[in-house]
Image (cartoon, rainbow, N blue to C red):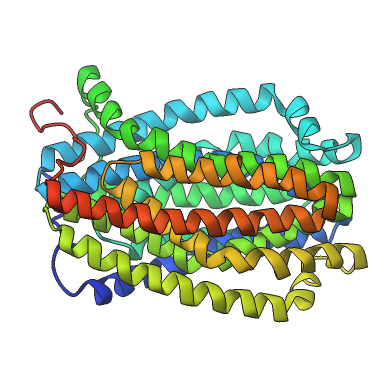
Length: 462
């Protein structure tokens, strides 16, 4: 039976459609970020050293997650355009091949992770005391990667159909399971052994297994996207080429952030474990601050993909204007709120005055650029959704490696941690302006020159 999905995002009022699709994604992302925040809060109860240890894992966790997100974005882009073209055979071949690709990537990443664990975390700045705790966590976390990649890519495939509800529900369920199991496994409640860092990783693994089962069931039984009869090798290779055309740049773009964060964390680590703990805790809060714009960017990719497939550039242009205005107003509001409540927020994690001091510094300075960061998220969604990911890569590389890190090196010598955080704000504001101008120029060029969308392959070849 062919997939039943039809183009859902090419008709109707743009603003109302984006709101309707974004709301369930907000709850889904809120639950996922609660997932990470809950881990951090419970581990922080074990002590500042444990909080520093889980903070050191943050860049690696982000690399893996963003690699999976990149694969999901690539798959979502080609599947959404295939849905816009109403090509059912292509949809099924692309979806099935993407999951085979995900399993292959998991094996490679997991192998590299185990082989490089000690030197990698020492490079970031971990000492022998924190490294023992890091390994307790990561040895379990790496084993469970397959249950992260497959459902995450699967959720992106479901989103490509225009269904944001079930991916959101799946993420909520995962977060609730983790919330329940974290204190049980970490502190040894209800007769379970006290596992501390291992317990946090084990709770994460169980939650991932549940999302794996749920997303796989939707793809197989409801959407009929997954076939038990695997496509031929030639079809898989052609599908992979189509997916990787967007997935590689998208994954690279997303992994630039954690790689950069790792470098920045090594700079922060010079100022002590309190500074690292504060950076890790405040970074979790930052993830919450991005929930709404990330949800919107998750929606804008499939929206752009389907409308590119249907040649409705007018709808893309209208959506872009509405999204950018929202990012500016909402980002400024967040900066005010986080500045006002910065002390109370940091006290959720640690009562150490030095941790609170460094954390407040983070929340007073970096949110000033959240409006621009939101704009960059949206612009990247437009570029990736249309199958032209290079501009998103350029914006991300320039922000992190041309501006942020060089400025952080310069400013930290003069202003210490304050200089590192100020460098982020300056770099992000500059690239936010670039992203706005480039994305609108891209859409105008698309309309005037009738640019052909990046190919997803033909139904005959796939």
